[in-house]
Length: 379
Image (cartoon, rainbow, N blue to C red):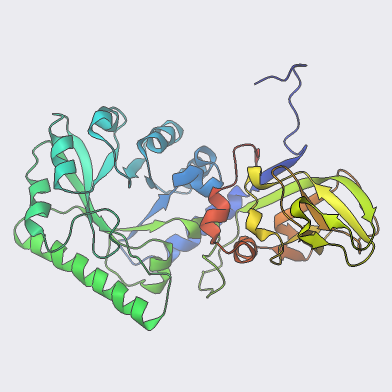
C-alpha cells in the first residue's frame, strides 16, 4: 500500500508490536527439553500465532526443528502452508465438505468432529488425512468415548487416512482437587478408547492430549504430540502459579506519546468523566486504544505502563485510538517518547499477565486481540 505522497509511515510512528524471535526459539527449545521421550512438539500457531505473526513465527520454529503445527481454520492452514511448505499442519476446527478440496490441494490434516463429518469428507472421493477428535468431557467438538461404534465408523471410511487421535482437556490449567479429578477422568476416557481401538486392530496414529498447561501439570502422559500454544509465546493464563521452565515473553507492545499537558485538580479525564484528577496532574496522551487491542476494561482497574523505566497508571477510559497516563513524577517527557504497555523498560516490566489481570481476562485474549493496525516489528 502507498500513501498519497508515496511515503510509507514508519513502523514506530504511533504504536507497534515487537516480536523477539530469539525468545520464541528459546521457548521452543525449553519446551522440547521438558517433553517425555518419544513425544514431539506440535506448535500451535492459530489466531496469527496468538497475535505474533504466523509466517515469521512459523519460519523461526521450523528453523528450530519444529515440523508439526496446529491451526484453527482452513484459511489459517493455507497461509501457514505458504510460509512453511513442508510442515505437517493439523486443523483443529471444523472444515465444511465444500472446502475439502483445499485439504487435498494443500496436503493438510483435518480433525474429524463426528461420524457425519467423516462421511461428508469421505464422500468427496479424495484421499484426505484426518485426526479423530474425542469429546472426553469438554463438550465442544468430538465424539463421545461411549459411542465406540461411531468412532469406528471413521476408520471404515476408505478415503480417509487416519493420522492420529486427540482430545482437549477442559481444566488442565487448574490444580484444584475437583479439576484434577476431572482431568484425570478425561485422560482415562481417552486411553480406554485408544486401547479398545487397538485391541480391534485399528491403527490410531499419533495420540495427543496436552496443550501448554497439560504439558507441565500432566507431564508424564504417554503421547506422541504435545500441543504448545501460549507457552511458546512465554505467557501464562494468569498469576495462579508459575511452573514454566525459564520461558521468555516474546511480545512487547509499545506506543508513543502524542501530547503532554498539565490538568488542574478536579478535572475529568477521558469519556464519561469516570476519573477526575485529585491534584494538579501532568497527563500524557498515548497513540493507542481499544481499536488496537488495548482492553477497554483496563480503565480504572490498576492498568499500568512504562515510561522512561518508570511505572505509571492509565487514567480514565481507554479511547478507540488513544489513552491517557499520569506522568506527573516524570520530569522530562515529551511528544514522541516511547510508552511500553507490555514488555520491559530498564529494570521494570509490565507482563501480559498484568494486563490480563487488570482487564479481568486471560493472556490469550490480550494477545489475540492485538489488531492488524499495529505493525509487527521482528527482532
